[in-house]
Length: 533
Image 1 (cartoon, one colour):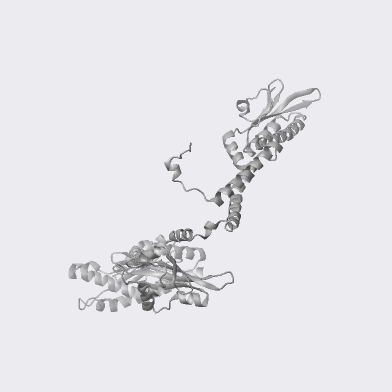
Image 2 (cartoon, helix red, strand yellow):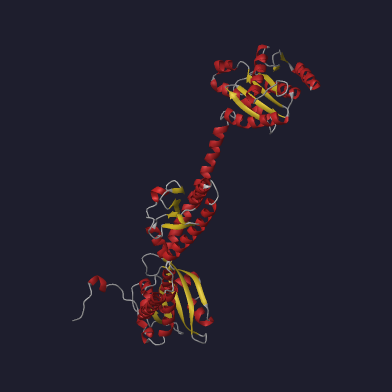
């Protein structure tokens, strides 16, 4: 009675003859290796090898312990050495030196808890004992407890076993070599390799359309993918390819010569001929046409292999990808612009374009630290618009904003590239002048004050005859004896209040602990400070 296989098992594809023979040869080879190892013990046991290594290590340690204990009062040294060995090794859990009466002479902290083997039992893989002998015979032993990782070590050792590695190598490289060799040799013996149906089946697995043409460009074979491109169906085998009007028309529209003619005539490969197939089709198809000459043993062309690859979907995806990339680039540029706008909003006052206090202090602190470290001069000017409240009360806040903008514009025009200008608050501004001493700072403040007095009022065109003035306070690192940026600004602010008290539209320098000075007094004070220095 014939054995019937289950339905699910019968549906599993059966390996070909070449694969089955290669697998059989491999099985025989593996069986021979296993038999030789069983009889001759070619591959040593990993368990025995590891145990021998541990026993040798234990003997070496026992010799060192015996030498140390032969000296008086060395138990502490031995205990310290045992602890160092335990910490240095990942496999050792504990070590102890035990007398024959069971007393531990020296041991690591957990040895008494971990050691389980009796004195008369043989050493195991995880517990190794080496006797210590003296002149009168055995007086003790060195005990080493190794980590018991049987499961992990067993799997690791199993995977690293030479026998398994050899079998794995045979199972991969051996099977591949057997299969390739048999495949090459058996094709000369197996007549089924020449059956066209097998070739046709293989070609039908390809996703691109494929034709095999003879020297007269007649179709000898067409796969299913090419037949699906044929409008209205119809027979393909036996027809000249030139009769396929939909393909010939596409080549004519593309201005291309038939690539199969070139491939056969010139005995070469023609690739990447782009055609648009539209005749008789519901939707246009973009395809790439490739042709390769089929050569005989002497290298002469005997036909042509043609492939037609539908890349319509690929073009659509590439188009979407290009669109997405363009959108991403536009978004990146927009984000860059927005980041720049945010940077301006975060660091600059939107009304005047001056730095805000946060940005000003971030940069001014560095200039001040440099001046304090090197002794270079640095000046600070504090200024505000005289009687600014009157502009708001009389003309409204819009005119008040114009006044602030006009003053800020004039302050900007008087600055060097290395100077810092900050809208300190309301109508008040702070200026930091690196490399400027007291006399020069007073002259700069006086020049700006005069410029504001003469140009700021006419600059506000919404109100005729407007008069705008500003008061200035000046401080410097040396003359103001400032020890920080806040102190320097505070001194300049004191000068500003002194200018206000003196009648406004003035420049004043507030001496530390003294009276405020005008430009002439400040110049004299600067000369005195220089002479004292």
